Amino acid sequence: MTDLKYFILRRLITFLPTVVGVVALTFVIARMIPADPARLWAGGVKAKEDVIAQLAQKYHLKEPLYVQFFYYLRDIFTGDWGVSPVTRRPVLADIASYFPATVELAVFSFVLIVTVGVPLGMVAALKRDSWVDHLVRVISIGGASLPVFWLGVLLQLAFYHSLGVLPAVGRGTPPPRVFTGMYTLDSLLCGDFAAFWDNLSHMVLPGVTLAFSSVGLIARITRGSILDTLSAEHIDFARMRGLTRWLMLKHILKNSLVPIITVLGLTFSWLLSGAIVVEAIFAWPGIGSYATSAIANVDFPAIVGVTLLMGLIYVAINFLVDILYALVDPRVRL
Image (cartoon, rainbow, N blue to C red; front, side):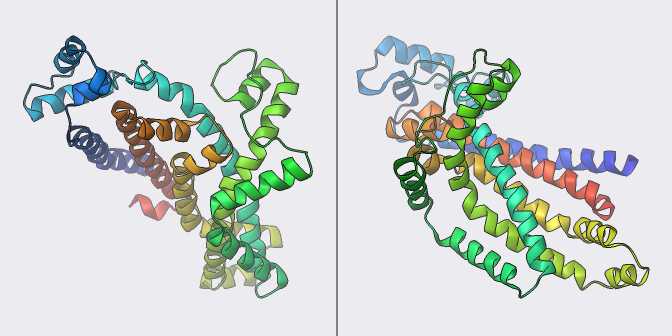
């Protein structure tokens, strides 16, 4: 346990410069625009001069760059991520209202990927060159080659227009009370099961669309990792010891987890940041829709805010993946 604490401390120290780098990158992006930032934040060509002057003073835009960076850091860590000229609200408040919808959809898709992709990969490895193995290969190729927008529209045509069993767009019924911003979870917490099932049904089509390309990838990674483990000498030794099938499977899976955890961590990051197309197809009011609207309206504070958020999420997830490595394989702590 002491080794684990030192490992986490070392990783934390290593990731701090990465966080500063992400913040510095968003600062550079914000300052590289070929226009007056204060005018853009105030609303563009129609902005009033007194408002522009107030914003320039508030964000120290007349100061040297290193002074601006200091105040930028201070504002970020004190929760001041600027004000959107489009919504007229603080960017952090906008993100807080949109982001739970994306997290909810990403978690739903991630559960699908883990519960379908990992078992498929395990079966494909244990039944190598069988019809299951060939089916997993077909799913992997299909997931990698099918465009997301095409699959989304196809599912809408099949399950909404033809069968009429699932809703095509929207997020569902708002819960009576909002605790987390995630409708399904809040509906459960309120005990409103009708809203829960309605919200869950709205998540099925976008969730499957988002998860489909990653299911095949995880299945292939799992298959390859388990086959590598099966060819190791310690597995032959375990067989000779006469371990039961269940203990053998547990042993094999534990020794195959490191590459699977790596890909799952990257996949979850992608689900959070790469849902823009899916959210647009299914009118899902998440952070992807917010980012799309910000780009269309040249809402620079919002663009920088979303970029910063996604960068910090990538860093945080990589940090968590490293800790999982250390828990699964103690040799990583050395």
